Length: 187
Image (cartoon, rainbow, N blue to C red; front, side, top):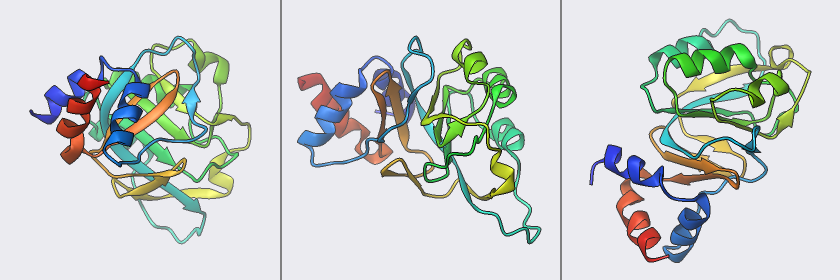
């Protein structure tokens, strides 16, 4: 089965079923403490595009900003912002609108967001640890794009399949998608 076919099937499956299937296979890949902002957020499944944030050095390293990364994404991708649970906000409503315009399936943030109320009203599913008013750029900077990241208790690699709903996020390695879906059908 192609990755596109697997993603289409994952879109129809609750994240709890995926967790059960992965547990049967001895796999791990569930996030902790990252939940949808809107309880009405629809089920998502898509390929991960990762952004890693770390302590600010201020040495002039030039990486693309969030908007540039979003413009390079494919429709259906899931933007993953990894910042080890920072209390700083990593994005707001404008970034979410840009992601919607470019057809992303959703955004996952291991940290906080600002513009919570506005984001909760959007059709764009956004998963985060909470709301925050402290800006990230005073303490953090983007240090890597599309590299493996540590995200809310699990590892996410670029291209991993992110499955999310009201229970949270599950991460499936694409090379194990067929095995996981076979188990899901048996759950």
